[in-house]
Image (tube, rainbow, N blue to C red; front, side, top):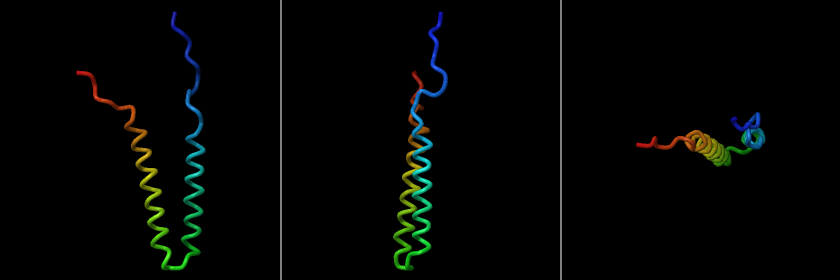
Length: 72
């Protein structure tokens, strides 16, 4: 007789919280970019680029973490 498995995901719900924090941070940086003087805008664009790169790296890492080499 197979053992019952718990229904639903076994992970905690951090994904939605992280996405909300990233969204709020992007909005705040965007608002600051609109209010900043021109000489500071390049630095804010670099910050946004770094944040997008970090999020993309995290997502790619999470997607590829479970994929290993098949046994030979």
